Length: 348
Image 1 (cartoon, rainbow, N blue to C red):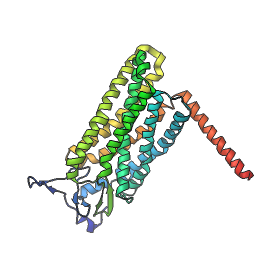
Image 2: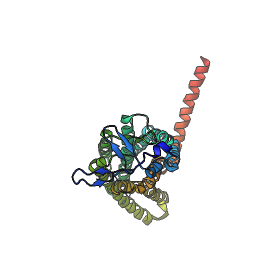
Image 3: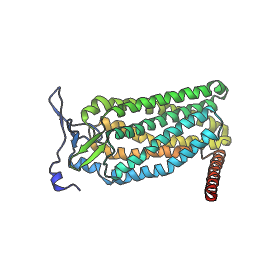
Image 4: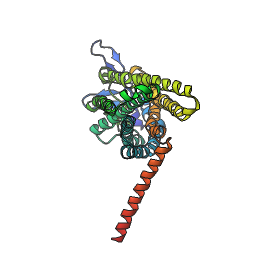
């Protein structure tokens, strides 16, 4: 609850449109009144309660923490096996890039966890807030693009096997991976160059990305996120639906022989729809709609979306008995090396 003195200063935020002179509400995740000279913001009581409600200060960091604890070790182990224990193949190259994108997203979660646990207070500086948000959104869309490439690769291999040798080459997979990372860097750039932190006077906290001025939203971030939604989510989503739909149809025609591949395909579609679809739709609606009622649903969906990076290695890698054996072998070798180093230290 806010102190009485601070509560007296709460008021509804508006901004004057320079062209019409009409008072117009800010449009953002939560619409503030921003002093452009001091970079301070003011929210009314209802909006400030949304910023500091248990969903954002307890549920969200706990979800991120679970995703980090489970996702980062499993992705790092999968990356080790893919790089050092498997043969270079087009499909493996795409999976390596997917795993790297997932790892990079998961690595910034501790900073988001700390931010939310502290009541949505950011004290790591403006520049680092920009980096964290750019890494979060950039690698989320990088992961989606990699999922689309993996879907195309599976589609060619299973639906058009006779064309696979010509279309599925190591060079092609490397080129497509390079394109993905160019797109990821381009997606990060607007967040890296725009201001992301503002101080909320009432609660004496500094917000990272959650409260932004409406003029920036309308002229800059709304077109930015609309472009991201179209090119880095909607288009890959259509590709994934088409490719996995065709793969499912082909596998079902083969009968029980490909039961395992059918289950993996269904799981990929299910995780994409459950984890990534809601957050991306709500993200776009949040910047289009003028109501702050979407803020909490979007925060909830954003927490769920982090589990996509956590679940990916279990769908693509650990369901395979061969991959599990390689991962187990890698862990055993690592433990043996550690034991030997400990023994040598004790002898010394």
